[in-house]
Image (tube, rainbow, N blue to C red; front, top):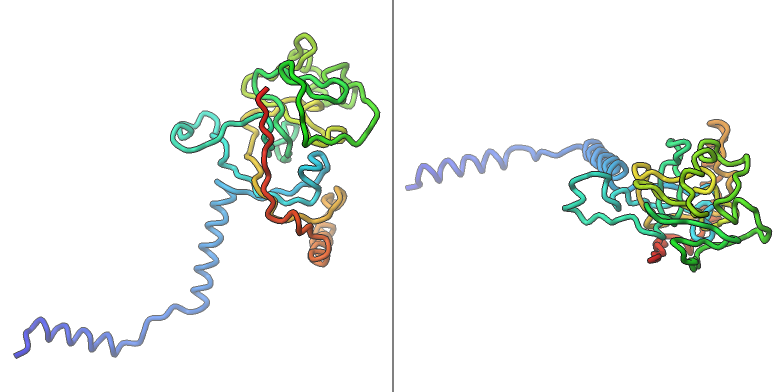
Length: 268
């Protein structure tokens, strides 16, 4: 005699076998996949990773115009965040390449190299950079103009009219015995292409809160000029996108794809 429990189980199995299988539509599966992908992408670009491109020559030859970077936004401990005691954040070091909001216009992002930490004394003499009394050996720096510019190449010195006016006014407050002293909570950044870099010499210090993160990888690089990234209208932008698509296989710098960006740390 079959038990009551066994009979109920057999009936349930018979009903399940007779019922048509429940299948999600292909459209729904694609839709759900897209939603998940978008959520992950938004989470990544908001909290962890963000893409940037290089539109100028100020970091040559380390970074070239047309390099597209992946920037680690979580590399450095958020200022004043208690999580910095628990998570493996890095501290900003001399020689780090950083992405930051341009102090003059925070809607614009700049990429430069940190050459001065809070308390450091900075000076440029005949194009050579000195920090805390020591001449730095900067293998990453290039000079493309042989002649000397008094302000650019002997910094700090008499300020020309081309310098950002608020910085020109504030600069004497940070000078001591011919050295620029970096104040607390700020950093001094310069481009590797020293003769063609709009950097701290011309607009001042980078506040800690302006630092977005550090570039870690070149995920794509396209032979470009600065004019390729200047759009005066939507139609110009669309033409630029179409041009990029057409030229992609011919102007991609394949040798720079997935190139890791390494800092040059120095002790002095």
